[in-house]
Image (tube, rainbow, N blue to C red; front, side, top):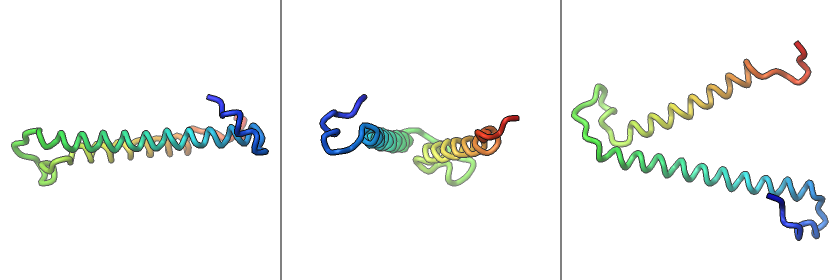
Amino acid sequence: MTPPSDLLKFGKSLEEVEAEFKKAQLKKRSTRSALLTTLALLTAACADFFVARKHGTLFFEVLPGFNAIYGLVATIFLIHFSASFGHRYLMRDEQDDR
C-alpha cells in the first residue's frame, strides 16, 4: 500500500511520509493482534466453565480458566525464550566473517 499523495503537499519528503504510513499500519496491526489474543483468551476461559472436571491433581487445576491462562503464559514464555536464545547464540554480527 502506498501513502496518499496529498500528504506530500505539507513539505514532507516521500521517505518521511512512507515511514509514518508504515508506522501507522504497524500500530493498527499490533492493536488488532492484541485484541484478537485477548478475545481468544476470554473465549477459552469462558468455554472452560462448560468442561466437567471430576478432580485435579493440584488444587488450582480445578479453577475455571486455569488451563487457558497456563497455556497462554507458557506460550509467551516459549516465544520470548526462543527469540532471546536465537538472538544471543544464533545471530552473528555483520562484521563477523568467520
